[in-house]
Amino acid sequence: MLNRRNWLRQSVLATAGAALLAPAGLEALNDRQGKLYERLADPGSDEAYWEMVKSQFTFAPGLTYFNNGSLGACPDHVTQATNQFRKTLDGFPSKYMWGGWDDEKEAVREKVAKTFAVSPETIALIHNTTEGMNLIASSMELSEGDEVLLSSHEHTSARVPWKYWQERKGVVLKDVELPLLPESREEIVDLFRRAITPKTKVISIVHVTNTNGMRLPVREISDMAHEQGVLVAVDGAQSMGMFQINLDELGCDFFTSSSHKWLFSPKGMGIFYARAEAQKLLKPLIVCRGWEDTSIRRLENYNTRNLPELLGLGAALDFRALIGQERIENRVFELKHYFRELLSKDDRFVLKTPAADGLSAGIQTVEVRDKQVLEVKSSLTKDYGIDCRPMTSHDINGVRISLAIYCTKADVDRLVRALSS
Ligand SMILES: Cc1ncc(COP(=O)(O)O)c(C=O)c1O
Image 1 (tube, protein in one colour):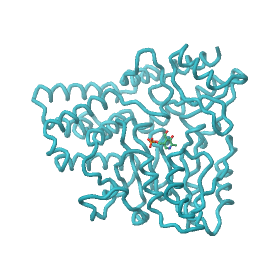
Image 2 (spheres, rainbow, N blue to C red):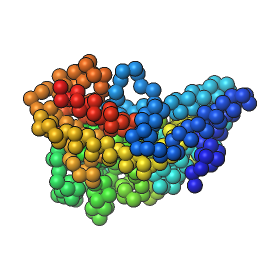
Image 3 (cartoon, protein in one colour):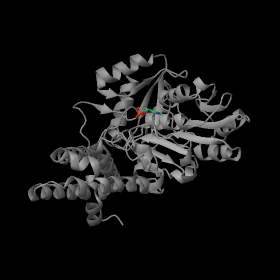
Image 4 (cartoon, rainbow, N blue to C red):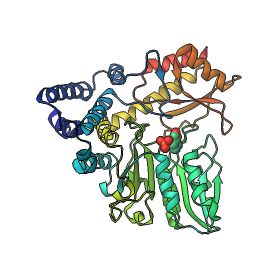
């Protein structure tokens, strides 16, 4: 049960950050955390609650941020916690870097595992999705002529590793062309089913595309692929934190993400999941002292590393736990529906993202008829202080809007007014 006392006690800041604090500092810390608990744990009235959540983030003056898909922001609580960890580390560097924070690091792994409903023994704490995809692609023992299926919407960070580590050996990379607006999840599963041949060894797919926010049916593709002895790797950079995920139930073999996007952790942290039975297929990208470890920790054995950011991920999960995973997911869908409903009132807007909740969530891409996207994006930035990502690939001429929990309905109203002008 998440009550005030429990939350304060299990908060990563309360343990790791407090290590070197004088009693007065400790008091201030507890006070700050107590206030945060009181604010976030009370749902209050709807829009006022989300305005208050937004107030926990400090964006540059005048900026309205709809670009979480490029990079998330840390709530102030997470920034302060991470700064505290940096201070603690620099108070006694050799102690904290090599062993002094072992328990705290494991506590973060446990929090990640709990958030995504898996065993901590399936979770490695890495730096980002790019690293996770390199880890998968470099590990696979594939031979000339073997095939890897990718979707046509893979991010370069999930495509280049396969090119670099496997295509050069004669492994064939095949793209499965995805429609921008599929009618159903089954339509996507069918495309992959038809692309599999006896030579297919791996399907490597994005969970939510960075282009138009399309959500791929990972569970169904994994079930179908496993029946044919094909492994499934998932790039979850845009999905982890956007909606609830039970990693085991997703059914894939490997899943990797960057927590600096939808989980709001400090930059340079990532999460890697490997199903227990698939772990033996993985070879660490980096080896050093301690390489004999056979647990999943061998995949995150970098010697000196970014521990304040790693512990900051724990603080980000504490922050999210106060709001609640379900409430976060519901809010993302609420914003999506609100945004789409406003756009539907003006036929100059053409949505490039599938409507069904099973096919999209917190990323929506929209074209403004008869306008070049770069022009639209430049006016949003210059005239309205709105940041979002212009998309020009895959026949899209639209702005990609990320709807994260710090976006309010008033922000969405402003965005739609700006797009209409
Ligand atoms: C779908 C997808 N995969 C991978 C990445 C790469 O993320 P990172 O730079 O954190 O490794 C991104 C970044 O935007 C992305 O959108």
